[in-house]
Amino acid sequence: MYDYLVVGSGLYGAIFAHEAKAHGKSVLVIDKRPNIAGNIYTENIEGINVHKYGAHIFHTNNKKVWNYITQFAEFNRFTNSPVANYKGELYSLPFNMYTFNKMWGVVTPEEAAAKIEEQRKEITGEPKNLEEQAISLVGRDIYEKLIKGYTEKQWGRDCKDLPAFIIKRLPVRLTFDNNYFNALYQGIPIGGYTKMIANLLDGIEVRLNTDYLENKAALDALADKVVYTGPIDAYFDYKLGTLEYRSVRFENELLDKPSFQGNAAVNYTDRETPWTRIIEHKWFEFGKDENGNDLPKTIISREYSSEWKPGDEPYYPVNDAKNGALYAEYKKLAEAEPKVIFGGRLGEYKYYDMDQVIAAVLDRCEAELA
Ligand code: FAD
Ligand code: UDP
Image (tube, rainbow, N blue to C red; front, top):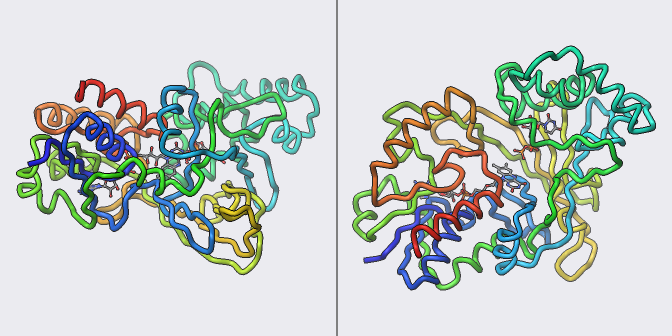
């Protein structure tokens, strides 16, 4: 009999399991996938750590989180600076003086501010949706070329039907600064995320290819408590209806040349290009292998966003009002299950970044394992 059965070997499950073991508890981790690490799984191919479930850049302002995670990996100094490609025109992201100069020819911060001010006038009052929020942040020109098409591909919904907060996380700067994140700490774990998760799970029993929901009764019988990091609606057999998720399809290609696009991420912000972005994985580690040698080949991934349907991987919770209300009902059911802890991006149906997952699970561990 184990003290805890942890369902999911992603970041949340791996940290919970590590902390439980450190507190003298016995733990079994299971995952339905053939590999550990959940969505941050990386696989080394041709010397390149490929982010198999989408590009992941660690960033945080939370010192406690940073101090915690760096016990399990050393991080490099990668800074995310994606480029936007709008019908062959290239723009710097996030929105900053390089972007404004290219868009409008403005040279000084004052000129850029005046241009934005003039364009944002069309929005009066508190922005009610993503379109209004975007125009009020950066004006209509940037909205039309760099936001509208990308966002509609990413979310499969009109910008008028999306919540404003999604776009609020992007910085807008009147300085020449292409750093995508306002974060004090940023980087990629050297050797890949999978190694980091393996370090967290060191000495812990892990069973892969094991679906909890298919063997629930037998697996429940193995432990006193369950930590569940899968989708909350799936746990309850969708009895109140399905929460909506966005899924992503990755099309990977190995190319026999040293560089495809010269940058880790290029966003295709027009509506017509079917993919949202192309990731070139080697640039997360400066194009070098672990010995510092230049890599002769490259691997790219085109990302296609799609609506989730049963059988797909659910990647992004759709945190709009309708889904928020349904989640609140599921949460009530979850609270009535005293032996189960629901955690992580799918268990809590929250658009969490990695650092927020770490903060959440550490809080949970403090309450649970003290
Ligand atoms: P997951 O990693 O999803 O782990 C859940 C695990 O549970 C999975 O391994 C799954 O197989 C398993 N599981 C589910 N159901 C069952 C079941 N029934 N039985 C057994 N196992 C089950 N965050 C950042 O900070 N920076 C980024 O750049 C970034 N980029 C992202 C890009 C993409 C495309 C996506 C989708 C997310 C991104 N994130 C990023 C967010 C990040 O992936 C999450 O915050 C984090 O990985 C969530 O960890 P988790 O443990 O909650 O979930
Ligand atoms: N976004 C955009 N154009 C871009 C990049 C992002 O319009 O080139 C918008 C889009 O709506 C996206 C949101 O900003 O959903 C947040 O972007 P972020 O990169 O933070 O999303 P992530 O993919 O990390 O969830």
